[in-house]
Image (tube, rainbow, N blue to C red; front, side, top):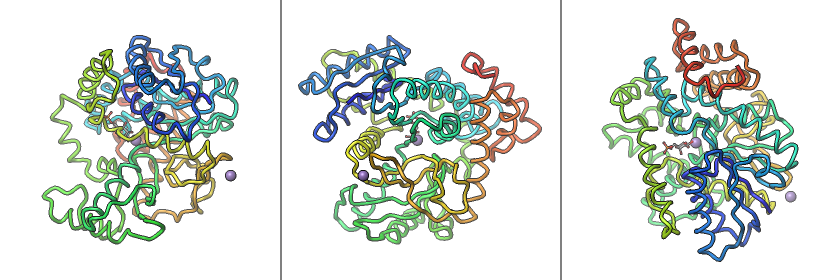
Length: 428
Ligand code: G6P
Ligand code: MN
Ligand code: MN
């Protein structure tokens, strides 16, 4: 079996590879292709990965490639974790928001939109290579904005099976289990628990947790409320938790506490991209050390920790037809009655060899639905702008976004976004 990683030169890649190495008994991986257009970085990260695999008896081959089509040909799974324009482009996304007094963030708001416009054409091209050289392979997308990109793939490359993933659901589940452990003294293996969550990627609401099928949400919620009441600056006001009985994805802070988030970003530099550039430089320095064969601790300073667990569990469940439940981004296909069946949602789905099937879920209550519908409208318009080069769609996407600049400034922000990213926007 062949697995391909597009963006294989990412500093995250060694974590993913260690995930594969831990699952050799259930995943008969023969060839792992790491593809990246940055040959220098690929050589450093790929070199370290080859040493990691070598140190464990070389159970599979690791092939480094700068040719996308060759890397994809014959693959069973293609994981995308690329960053068009690299970290410098993320920095530009953050400062695009900053310049205009808006949230400046990798996935949320104008930064996420700019990233989507750069990235979607590249992903559609990957889907094309998959269609032609790896028919039936599953595309597993980590590239942000992860949900919006799958929204575009499902509309503009519907014949290529694709799913989007994020580490927030798994880290959230682990955090809730940690709380339960603190109160009961008993550790609960993550496989025994299922998190109930619904929404969009980085715009979801957690509303349930079961352990061995038993509902433990009242306990989790009570602990969240108790903690919130003890803290001077809780993530979420206790009143909110009591009223909604839901716990939001932490990215919702950009919507619910916009003013505070703007105040924080007035302290830049360093923005998050600028911090990550430093972390990455240090990681690359360590990866280049021929003596290094184990993951450096610095990797856990990145927000994407545990993404390898998400990816490898998903691939294992799919390959072995396990019928497990995993939280993914996928068109819900009517699983949430009364919502447009084409919408890509982040939600639990049954994973088997024949496909990934979203599990039926009740629609979110009105307090959450309003925001979700507005952001979904923004996503659909952004997907159209990115895939078709439709400038009016881009203009209207900015107009509908709840964090948007407001009509007076939409055109100015759009012009800045396009000018700043011009080398990466062939569709316009
Ligand atoms: C979380 C999100 C990812 C995001 C990451 C940022 O894990 O789920 O989608 O990319 O944080 O982490 P970073 O270290 O790059 O700021
Ligand atoms: Mn994410
Ligand atoms: Mn089956």
